[in-house]
Amino acid sequence: MIVQRQVWHDYTKYLIADGYGSVQLELYEKEQNFGGTAFIYGLYVCHSYRGNHLGDALLDQAEFCAKHAGHKAVFLEWEEKDSPKWVFEWYLRLGYKEVESDKHGYLLKKELK
Ligand SMILES: CC(C)(COP(=O)(O)OP(=O)(O)OC[C@H]1O[C@@H](n2cnc3c(N)ncnc32)[C@H](O)[C@@H]1OP(=O)(O)O)[C@@H](O)C(=O)NCCC(=O)NCCS
Image (cartoon, rainbow, N blue to C red):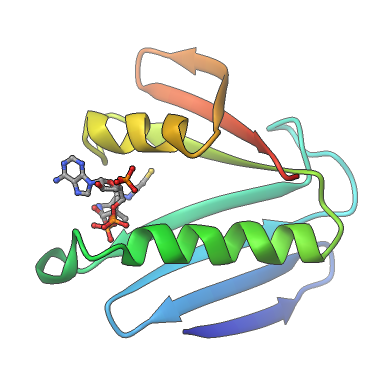
């Protein structure tokens, strides 16, 4: 797995990738509109490679990077238009909790222990 740490003027981005999938993490010093300082997005595994626990490994690596950088929680969004309901249920199994919802989906938060 490749982890590229990109330092931008107001945030740090982690691009975490494997040949078949990737995820991104943004880390901020100050609390953002979503209610925290660490946001995971763009989790995607190639269709032909799904179901091989790569999504699990990518998300785990993103959470590890946030924790290693000193963040206490990570946030992500699940939206019905992009992702099936089982993905939302998987996030709940991993310890993500609902922060807010609208008719399109949920903002979820996981405390990093
Ligand atoms: C969501 C996604 C990243 C998961 O990646 P993946 O490598 O296929 O997932 P994994 O093999 O790591 O499985 C993750 C969990 O989902 C479950 N799962 C996998 N495929 C499933 C399916 N088709 N139906 C129901 N559950 C499924 C697995 O059992 C596992 O749960 P467990 O660890 O509790 O047993 C991938 O399906 C994807 O890229 N989807 C399109 C983009 C997307 O929806 N991204 C999320 C945006 S919020």
